Length: 486
Ligand code: GLN
Image (cartoon, rainbow, N blue to C red; front, side):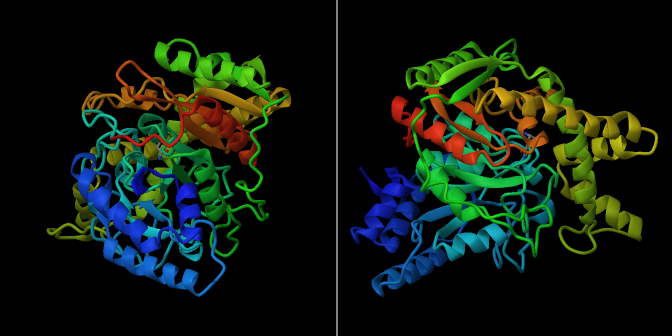
């Protein structure tokens, strides 16, 4: 087995035993990237020179006997909507194509403190708006399992880079499914943490009340290791970060499923979900039953409202968050403007892609005085009802098991002409953000075209440990772990 085929925890063991150096590891990732990146296109930018320097520092620290964290020396890729000091952070938008932040996101500082080696920045749908990566204004990313298919989105670059073995770990962000759905499409593990547990400082905002950064990896253990690095209160920089301390998810992993109650919501297995997807997830529930879990049929009756609620709330917030890109302070500025209003209108019209403009228009509409009560206010009220729906379900069960997306990865171009079709693909993931809950996605099978199928485990607030435990149990029982697309 080559280095690029190993998980972060396997690599960590090799590093700790001195059987491989961080430099060798980074070199291995650079050559794998060289080999597959032409087809996959997951990175917007890489800096393997900087990564090699960083790897040398870690090697020196290890040689000097310094105590290092478990992921010290492990390469990681970062979604390009997360600020990295001194290197471009583009949001895959013409608006920020040349934007170089002068500060690091809190999570980037945390990666550095833990000794991880950042290899580069990954592609996404422009400003994280999309489900296939096709809205990137900068480049195309393909699904490593079949380059004719999309990798999912918006964290499609982070999912693809991990699935292709270019790096064992990546960081993504999830507003309505952007970690989980591409994880599902690319056959990797992705965790969307409880809202408020990972700092959003330095994450370029899409919808602030829904956005959350999280880990992507090829095993549940790896996701737990990276989640441990990313989590933590950030009172100085993010007022929505929860003031609490966290026990190590990795150290507390426990795959014993005896007596664990797993809910299967009937609304997630009906019309509109591909038969192969439903079957794979229901088969997973049988695996759990065999492991001693109790399978409980439940209902989340408000699920059908999640999609409109999500698109109203997220677009409203996006329209407000993206108002700062006005061609004046930073970002793209039109070359031709005679007066101030021209600067605004032309800069924004020229630099925002069609999907971003659509969301801004929709958001502005639902926030405008005549429609605020009818749409925005109603959506907020409905959000509370969705939360209550979940709270009720979690009186009966410990975790909820669902599909991640109605289909497996579709063909590139298949849905680009029909935004509503694209939005429908988010049906299984958005309610988790609306309710602020954690969600874990991992592979549970393949369809007839050998494209991965992902299952989603949803937990109560701060229920990450229960999700990862259940994820680990399934991974061990099914052997569906560390899938590297060749
Ligand atoms: N696909 C969803 C959207 O387009 C989710 C995006 C996200 O989670 N960033 O809004």
